Length: 123
Image (cartoon, rainbow, N blue to C red):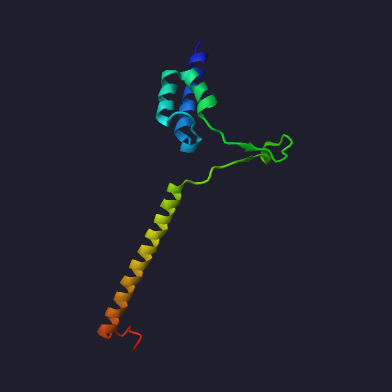
């Protein structure tokens, strides 16, 4: 009696979790939010549509697997230019922080040398 509604709910929740966790490049045809609305409004049909049409599983390249799934290789799309730009920005920020720290340490060293501190390398 409660088995069919429970299975419907389970399929819907599984599809929603899969949609939410899916990367942007692995979603076909519609936006992620539209797929979520479809699955909520049409639980079973929406979930089936998601798994059949909406989810891109990548191309499995068969390299002589002879039926062994561990030998299959999934082709991963190259990283986008935005990700490369973000990585370059992060490297630039890290370099800038290092340069700032080095300037502060050099200024501190010059101040100590100007005072004639006992820690000065000239003494």
